[in-house]
Length: 539
Image (cartoon, rainbow, N blue to C red; front, side):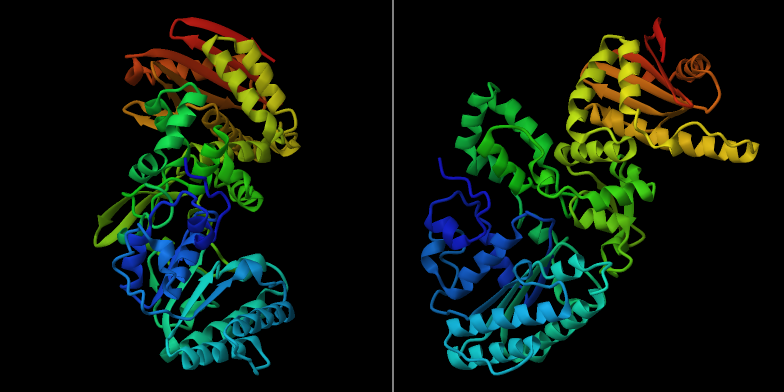
């Protein structure tokens, strides 16, 4: 079996050391023959740096590295171009002074590689001077490859240094427009497409291929690529995990597939896929490399937890370039990889996109961190607790279920507990607010249990709070909250509503469990029934 290239971002290292490489050079050939200034957005750890490295080796004419690949007999290897590759994650950019000094040093080192001496004082002038000097010296126009172009913008967002750093970037990127006659090809990658202070405002309409059908699989692995390139690893892992090949592929797909930028071509997260085959263990690899605390806090603060629980429909304006000082929650979740395109439909000449969480890895991880944000229950213990509570539902263990629910909610901030206000209108308003928050906790928790949740599923009789489904089983759930009403009364109301509205009727082809959960101030209660069997509990 070929070695797995985890953490390998150098195309030269990957090919010369015989690592596994999924051939993306057909996409690359289409890319370099279709435009001059190109931008691609993809989430972190999605292969952008390897793509940049591959382009660099291609333009340098390192023919031997491409032997056996699609592009090998289609490229003119007699032509070699000077390449300037900038990775902003390796350039210090905490302040104007820091970014100026660090970039100047980098550019002078690049010049030394070609035996060129730069005389300019400022980094932006050094950049232009290097481009012009390389063209004159080699007789070939220059290729500029910029990786993580938005890193300085995102890293200084909200800081006092942000304005001066953006001012530097504006000046720096303007040099690309000024030296256009000396340039062969410009390619940029990043996570976000930021407006006003970026290359998009100083260059002539870069081709944004982020959602272009032709490049939907340029990063990540398609199902066909996975099964063809990882065949030996799949077989070996199936043996180690004592699973059939078909069952293993189904679970890998559920965990790590699901990213799309056109609603049609689905790709696997490359980092998680490689990590899985390296360790032969299902885990949340990509999510754990950068827990998005700021995203979780935004979701909680803005009441947007449902954006990762249910599909979100947006129009094409959601994918335009963004003001870094007013980056919307939905575009941010999309560009950082926590939402992806599930479907695209044309309506009145404009596209409507359905966005959703890409796969189980992202969904499970987000649910754990959201639940932690609401309840303060330790993230690392939620998996074990969830498995126990799921089993308690199946065993009709209402008492154990309620005890675990109480345990999970023990550290819920006081603002979610019973209102002590003597003002009736204010108390009722707090009651409604608390119910909404408990409902979100309820939905997030059920999603974490591994069921197929259909929040507020509409029937011809009303709205179901949630339906949790597994093969041969459906759990129809109803949540009730009131600051002063007794638990038993609320549970009676929950179960009665399910029965009276016949919420269970669409699922009579399988075992049906009715689940009522009630919150009364600081008390928690539940009731679990299989249509006619009832077990109740209070805590």
